[in-house]
Image (cartoon, rainbow, N blue to C red):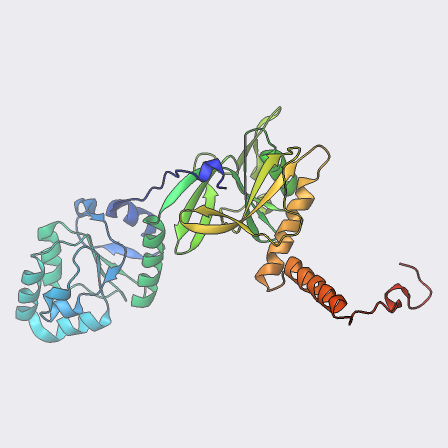
Length: 342
C-alpha cells in the first residue's frame, strides 16, 4: 500500500529555461563569452538537447531543429570558412527563417560576420566558449536534463547512511527528525529534513533539500537547529540518490510485520519503484541501529548477497534432505576446536 504522501503526487516540470539565467549561472563554468548585446539574452530554451546545424547549412533543412541550442564546432566552422562569404550569406539567409534560443561556437572559434549579423537581426544571443565541442555538449546536456526533469516535493527526511540514500516517511510526531538527528550524531549525513525535493533523472531519483530550508531541522521542544554549523561540513550533503524508503509507523497490536525479508515491498515515486521497509515504532526501540542494519543489508543486496534468500535456500535444502532421508546431524556442529568456549 502506497504511503499517503506518494498518492496523487504533484508532479511538476519546468517548461522554459531563460537564457539570461543560463548565462548568469554558467558563464564561468562553461567559459562563455557573449558577442551580441545583452538585450539578446531574453530568449528561452524549451527543448532538451543540442543541435549541430551542419546538414542544415549544406541545404538539408528538413533535419534542422531550430528549437534547440545551436552549436558550431570545428567541423561546421571549417565548412563555413571554405564556402566563402557569398555562400555564407545565402546559408544564414535561409536559416534566418527560423529562430533558435542561442548559438554557441566551441574551441573559442571566431564567429563569421554573416552569423553575427543574423543573430543581431533576430536579437538572438551568440556566444563562444573555450571548451571543446564534446565538453560543452556534455555539461550543457547534463544541466538541461536536470533542469527539465520531473520533480515533486514530499513530507519526509533524507539521510545518507553508509552511502545508502534512505528516505524517511511517516505521520507527524512519529519520530522522523529525532531518528535522523541521532543518525547524524553517529556520523551519517543529512540531506534534507521535513521537506524533500525529488527529481527523476532517467530511472534514478535524486533527493535534496528545499532551497529555503537547506540543512536546518526542527526538533520539537528545541526549535530550529543548523546541522551544518553544529556538526560540521561532514554531517551534510547537498543531494543523494534515493535507494530505500523507510516508513516509521506506531506499533499496532495485532498487525503483521515482515519477519523473514523474503517479501519485498516497493514504493513508486515519479514512476520509479524504490525498495521499502516498514519499521514499527515502540518505546525502547533503537531506530538508528535498525536504520544502519537496513543500510548495510541494502549494500549487501547491491553486491549480490541476499541473506534472507540464502537462509531460505539452506532451510529448504535441509527440509528436502530430511524428506529423502539424506540429512544427518552427526553432532560435530556442537564440537568446539581448541580450549576456548565462544
